[in-house]
Image 1 (cartoon, rainbow, N blue to C red):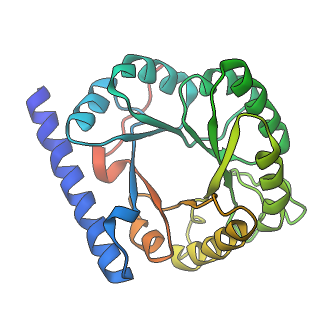
Image 2 (tube, one colour):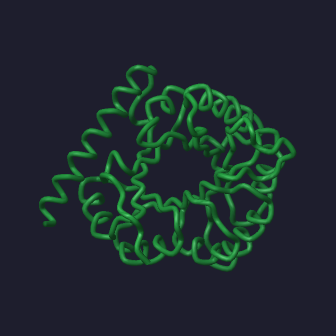
Length: 240
């Protein structure tokens, strides 16, 4: 069974890497500019191990309950763990214990909680500002239903991260709006990312693109793509 699963994952990885190469060629970019994050939610730690054997170094998870045990089980692999789901403040202590980069920073209260727990754990945590690209996002700077702040609120939140102890502002993250062409949305994100880099030159990560739209994300400057289905297959329901 393990050999069969390894072959499935190897095929998914090869196809995904080919898509990344093709997208980079079309955009005049180098594949070395792109970090592939394997989103392994609902899949077992054994899949993470197989992916690591195949050369994957970055793993993304959406749910702390699942991620914490998986990260502990794979602690010997030296992987980079990305927390990409909406994060409640009561889960921050657990997430800080294993996550290297939190993609879903969308409010000052979360920044404060991350900083406090990062200091307690004596870890530096990378942070991405999650930006809502939905035209219906709250213009006042509140958090959108799917997570993320309105573009106008990015500078203030970025300053909060930059000032926070044991946090490092790394860039931005976004999810393309449902039912819309992802290209224009990712183009807006690229503009937001450029403006952020003007004030914070080290914030050079643009986390955008998933299985269905990684090509458009790469065309518009994504540095990190978050791929689950195309890499691991159709998801199964998560069983507690």
